[in-house]
Length: 178
Image (cartoon, rainbow, N blue to C red; front, side, top):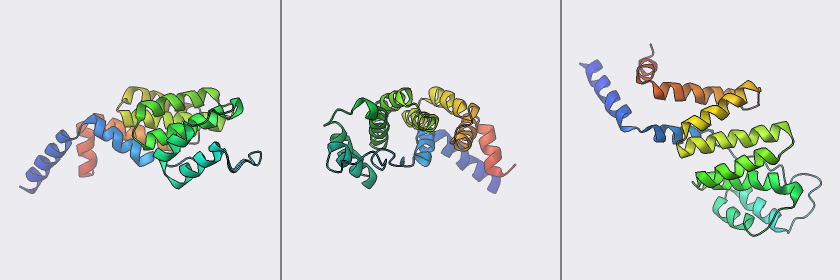
């Protein structure tokens, strides 16, 4: 009787969840603020520029205001990758996944440091998850694992959860501890 009621409630709960909801949950669980690599660089000495003001808002977690500040200046060529990374993150946190995807993709193309390229790709994968585009997210996550990126363990975790969410039997077995 208890097992029947458990199975019944599990089936109802699982059938109500959409794949997009699960991708959104996965994305939100792994989105952490990116460290400020831009204005903490010793070469960055300007504290009153629009760049500095935008980054202050970013660091405070005021992402919508940071978006407005970022949109009021044109980054120098050498700063364009950082600009796209942080603006993409602000869009991601403000639920503008499509704009986040554009900026993360651009930052991944513009960076020349391995760690920052992979960081951009990590956020790009999370933006695809948030959008509900599992196919592109999985492709990027597998790429991060293959090249041994810093984010590989989190990527493995996400891929396992995606696999379980796509297979109700695996989900039930994990729920029951089998």
